[in-house]
Amino acid sequence: MTDTVECDVLVVGSGAGGLSAAVAAAARGLSVIVAEKEPYVGGTTAVSGGFLWVPNNPVSRRDGIEDTAEDARTYLRHEAGNHFNADAVDAFLAAGPEAVDFFDRETELKFEPASAFSDYHPTAPGGRSGGRSIKAQPYRAQGLGKELKRLRPPLPELTFVGLMVGSGPELKHFFNATRSLASAAYVAGRLTSHARDLLLNGRGMLLTNGNALAARLFRSALDRGVKVWTDSPAIRLEREGDAVRGATVRQGGREVRVRARRGVVLAAGGFPQDKERRRAMFPHDRDNTGHYSPAPAGNTGDGLRLGEGAGALVEQGYPNAAAWVPVSRVPRKGGGWGVFPHFIDRAKPGLIAVLPNGRRFVNEANSYHDFIQALFASTGPGEAARAFLVVDQPFLRRFGLGFVKPFPVPVGPNIRSGYLKTGGTIAELARSAGIDPAGLEATVAEWNRDMEAGEDRAFGKGSTAYNRFNGDPEFQPNPCLAPIAKGPFYAVEVVVGDLGTFAGLRSNGNAQVLDEAGRPIPGLYAAGNDMASIMGGNYPGGGITLGPALTFGWIAARHMAGTADAAPAPSAETIGA
Image 1 (tube, rainbow, N blue to C red):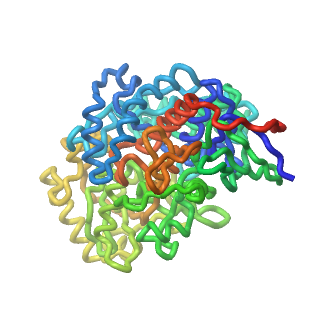
Image 2 (image 1 turned 60 degrees about the vertical axis):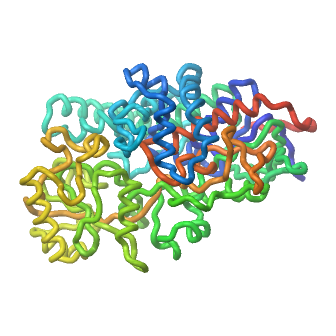
Image 3 (image 1 turned 90 degrees about the horizontal axis):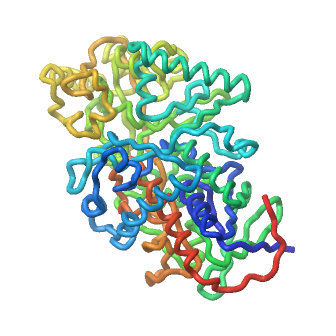
């Protein structure tokens, strides 16, 4: 016998898109249930860098940044090209600042600016050299109380002895700890505080980046009375005619029919772990051996399948079906692999990326998405898409490399595990890593000649504001350039991963999911990576998944709050969580 509960809004998934819809709907007086498939709340958001790209937002304006919706529209039209969705883009640009203001003023979600963080293509029409990305303020985990155990932890590969290091100024302190007394004092304080947290709580308690964003949204949902069910996958939508009226959710070993008067929001995180859809949409992963995603294992395309079952269409035409990122595979104790996304090390001075033939193929300091697109373009038919990041000893001691931490953390364990390849000469490194020795020697020699001239003549590393943002300002005149000259030399192999999928359900500016004829399906909404990206399969700036996720969750709630109760729900038992 199936139990039945009723609510105004059912949200499938608990990342930024789902939780923003839940919080915004509850703030408008609607009753909300969030059904999360996994045992943890937070989805991919909780393991992300946590930036949100929202042009003309009030947080950046308070920091002195000037921007306009017109300039942002010009930029997005350039970036999306033939896949520009004017309706959804205009809705995002109009509602984004309002959504940020709502969450910043009326919920536990508080933001801080990232005004120096450039768009990824700042010289393109409408591009900006900073101010469109913001992030959640760090959060003390005690604020979640007993619910902390349900928050998805960060990726262990992105922590240091369990410590979450915030991006931006805090990360720079960790890089400079051996060269600056101020940075050394800061890092010592953070490590001391972390050690105290471990002693008293058994874990780190200062949450940063996407973990802080997820925690703050989770707290805000709980504060508004949202019921958050975990271990509760939605298995089918409930329909009356063409309209969606709820869903059947498997909870606690039984099926629960959730009657949602105002609508269902699909926000289940896209399909990064759906091997069947990846084979169909990722050309490099036709046999499921060419792609490594750091996304949660439960992100298997449930929201897309639910939408398709109600007559929706998944976008098939984007030039990129996902947000690509180079990742390295980190051996884990006890077996298996972790995945380390390479966001900023590629921009540091004294690093080059080469193909197995030893030749460079890209401006290493460009965005992670652009890096992988260049890798695809340089990889022959039938070849695996892979490359190597190559550095020397001074680089490794100062910056680390991927999962390898800077001095004084020892590198021996990473060499013994096979993660870090090394050699006393460039040729020895090449043979150790499986790179063509002659090709790598020629490439490094060419690179070092360019360093004498102070310019990367081959690919222009360090030529844009975004390149330089992730470099090291102590290296002048170009913070992304330094020779590779002092052995031993090191390399880490990188392959293709993603930060989320772009090819979601076709939707309009109200976050309503559309049918084959382009008409809204009554009662069905999408947010986050279940919604087709408004960026048209491209990646204009840091936070272009989370910014729209937060905004369209808020838009969906606003639209549902403005709709009449389309069908009265029967009386039912209310089941809490």
